[in-house]
Length: 384
Image (cartoon, rainbow, N blue to C red; front, side):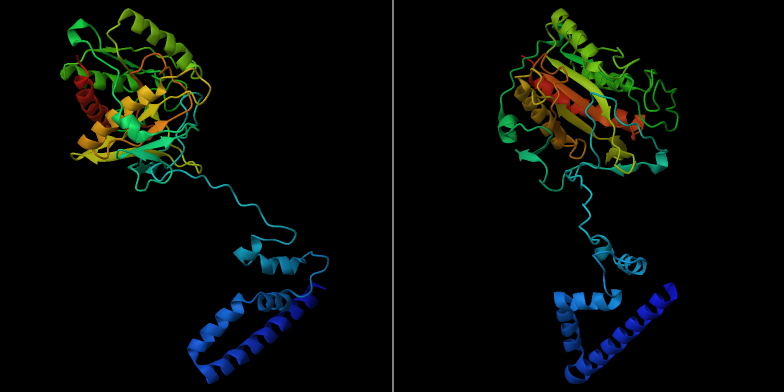
């Protein structure tokens, strides 16, 4: 039976090929090559012709079911294979991200996926937007809005900041804290560490976020600002619940030091594509490979009590403007998220992500230095 079907199929194909050859020869003799092309296009767009051709190729279809040889013929065509008999195949969901986002950024609340890769396998991206699609824009700024809140970015950028810093001599003005202090970077060169409970986290203060905070503190101090750097590791031994542990510490610092008006929770991001590709956010500034930074603003969209989130957004817009002016490719677009991140504790609170786990520590330190210089110039304008 299988041999008989095969010979019948070959006969049909041969007959179709012979007839098509005769038809094309007649068209060519009578009207030229241009007419042949036009005729082929017309025939190809004719539903009746295509249906007849398929019937010639496949033979009769009984009860809507294709035989083995018919299925084999159909599967040679991606178009036909995508629309099998009995219904259409649902399309795979397509993740729609703004052009400067190579992969979803994590929420900094629960443990993100920690896919690692060798330095040579990590994909470098300079994450600056090339279109406005997917962003809220205004005043030359871009905001990746991950909430359902309506944002007027131009109004936020022009809003007056209700923050007045006391002189540095009166006490600390800036608090640097790390809700996820053990976050670390890709090991490279001499920056080698012993992982804690994850391949991209460590208790080694020379290689985790505390080292990045030290670099910011150094630059702020050199600029004449007073900094208090909390070195607690609120994400160890347990990552989840870190903000519930760092929040009371922030409240105690604010009570103990009323001069603190600015709180920076310094992290790094984790960028992993759906196919497992590890990305790093990097640019080159003054010949130095530098991790990009991203300002993250919390909100009340997730149900948390945070009525003053727009004040923090105004501060973020002011800092972003300074970053874009001094170092145009240093900052990724700002992000507005649903969680509060303890930013309801004081109007000058922001989350700063320095690079991602694909970056090296040296790239992160370079990014931290430049961020502190740009942010420090804004902070100094708030004194008095």
